[in-house]
Image 1 (cartoon, rainbow, N blue to C red):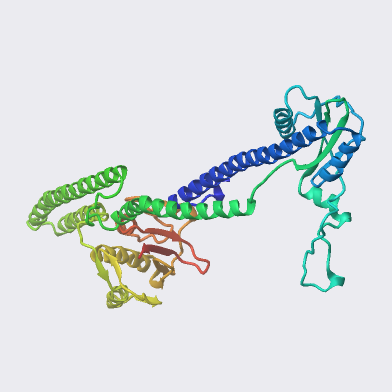
Image 2 (cartoon, rainbow, N blue to C red):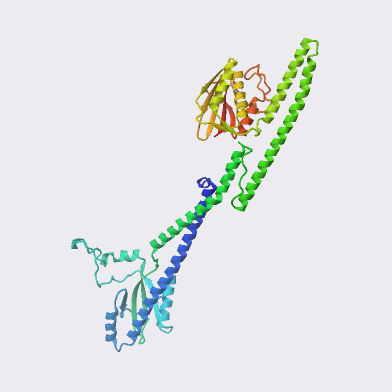
Length: 472
């Protein structure tokens, strides 16, 4: 069920509010129809009961049977049929439905508590009114006209309208029985289509206002989400405006505080790294100067080689620690120019780097950091595959740079482990690996600092392919 729900907070809030409004409107309509049903039935039933009571009084006051029959003949008009010849038939099982009980109470009120009467409902509808005939469509020629009161359709019409035959028998003062047959609807629904139209208009109006309100409430959350996404690419982005509801203001203040703490942490880390770099390089420099005083050339060369290794390891470690820092400002970078410069640098050292595709627009990034990332990837490809090919792709909202070499590739189980600091694959790609095992770690840290990702795969055509995925 959850998969059918909208994914956005705006969509879910609007769905729940609209569903609640629909349920509330339907319940209100049901209550309204029930109340109107009762009121209309009370009015109709009261009028019928009053007419029956008036006829009973007239029949009671008749001087003889002939006068009664003349009165019945005159008053026997639809929808109330009157008969003096039906004997009293005691109802053994009274109908206790609401409308029957209501009509019985109305009759008792009009006839008086001392007047004997009984009431039942059956489906033996009386004949249709034999009075005036009405044309359904007077504009049609006579052969195509239909009578509105056509008898064969009367039962179907009565059934569709929910009509029932209410049979009322009343004792007259001299003990005679008068039987009334009154057609009444069991349910009364007044103007259902009009009511549904009104409810629909109200629902659409309230839903539109709810959509505007929900949009206004969720807009600050969308701004907060965008700011959180941008924070990974630019730690020094402008702080959020604390606007909107109180909870959103508190979240914005907390976000700005977190950003300030991260900036202070990065600045402190930069100072520490600068101090460590100075403190480590100074003794290495002193050792290098002292090695020049050694008389043994073989020992001096070995000593200098060890110092070079130490220098590279220290520099690589510092580069690794600085790889994800955000001190460099974000600026638009021409990716095509950057790739061409890497291609020229490789050609100057006798290597071949191919470029497939072009970037259609600049990328906002930290230029020096991204150049370091691509340099590590290209150097890695040239070291183990002798040749590198860079493919540029631009899916919507992304920039993909695929760096592929022609080397032996990497075992699938090692594709993630090679990103671990100081992890090296000896013998799996080349026995003369060199390096410190930090190149890929630094490249991935830089990619993630830009809000992107770096992953490796073995393409079907062989070699190893590094996929640098960056957001636009």
